Length: 55
Image 1 (tube, helix red, strand yellow):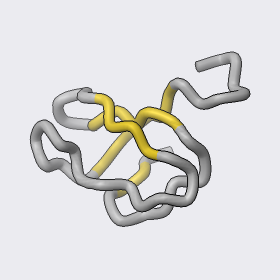
Image 2: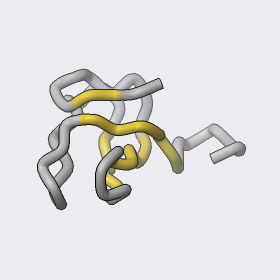
Image 3: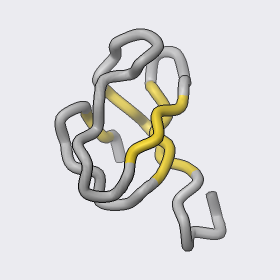
Image 4: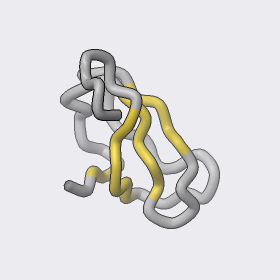
């Protein structure tokens, strides 16, 4: 499921940009920022979530 800049992160993790695939770390409850590398506002995947062994 895609995540977008401005949304609140439901879990802590690294969001991967759909354009440049750069990781953006976001803490649970904080707003998702635009990609710091290219400015894109859509993220297609979240990885390195604490408690989620599949990531």
